Image (cartoon, rainbow, N blue to C red):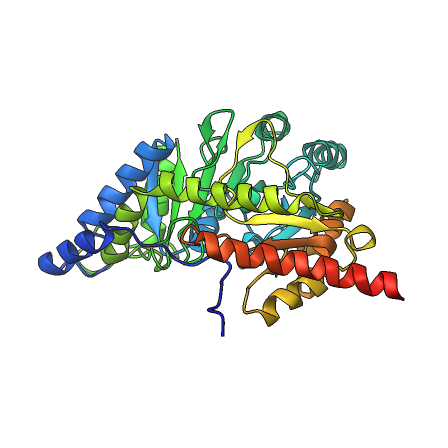
Amino acid sequence: MNKPILLSTPHMGDRELEFVKVAFDTNWIAPVGPHVDAFEREFCQLTGASHAAAVSSGTAALHLALRLVGVEPGNEVFCSTLTFAATANPITYLGAKPVFIDSDRTSWNMNPDLLQEALLKRAHIGKLPKAVVVVHLYGQSADMEPILRACRQFNIPLIEDVAEALGATYKGHSLGTFGRIGIYSFNGNKIITTSGGGMLVSNDPELVAKARFLATQAREPAPHYQHSQIGYNYRLSNVLAGIGRGQLLVLGDRVAARRHNFEVYQQALSKLPGIEFMPEASFGHATRWLTCLTIDPKTFGADREQVRLALANQHIEARPVWKPLHLQPVFADCECIGGSVAEELFTQGLCLPSGSNLTDEDLERVIDAIVAVHYRYQTTHLTT
């Protein structure tokens, strides 16, 4: 039996264990500690962010970000629809309601024209959203300049969800450093991982200080545990921060490996009819966290789901592109601006195995399996 080829697995380097050993040797096992401080500092050096707070997950970072910009019950928050549910869930934690914005075809990310149009309409009726959350999908930047321009026109804070795109850039600058706050994820499937973990960054030191305060149960400086606000248990473990420090050292290598995966897939599969890969927008440098393509069943011969199941039969994990949030039952009563582009990408889109630890043999297995599906269905069509 062939070994399983998974979508995106953790990829450890040589230094992570050294940092973890230091944590054990010094007994800094609890949340916070020297590794946390160093991880935040080194993360800022890598991204160009001014200030950072390490937390327990990307979702925690986004929850804090929304609270820090003043999202309250009854507010609306605009956010990308083509993304994982974790982008919108924290909006609901605060009693607010998401309004979803469709994708553009250039980047698959939030359509700046639809955002501008929606904000103009909201301004005319006096119902502007409290914040905008833009997602940088699958390792690629959204078109930030027009999105920032639209938010600044109406004085709306912009939060960048960079959970899938650490290492990517927009016009030479790291994602997460354009908006009021940027958030990142170090989940096990991300381009680098701390097992679980996240980061919140901002150029406003007061916001980051408040994030740390809220993430530590909003505990005030008193010997008897004084609390005047509701806080959260969101700080990152010193042990996991040690893993993160080691992972930061190899981020460039991990990006290069994933871009190599994409190039191999593209060279081998783009010649097949009906296959189109997620484009790389001219304004940015993508990490290709996941290699994504679309399959037109009319010309390819099989649809996305038939290809996915054929791969699964050979122990190869592939997944559909994110189901747009406006199609999710839990958000059925939420408004969506547009939606047809995201729906089409979901219907035809497939994410291929993309881990930075895949071998050339692994990539060849995936390619051969997809080619075989095409020829099998083409042959069946011709004979019928």
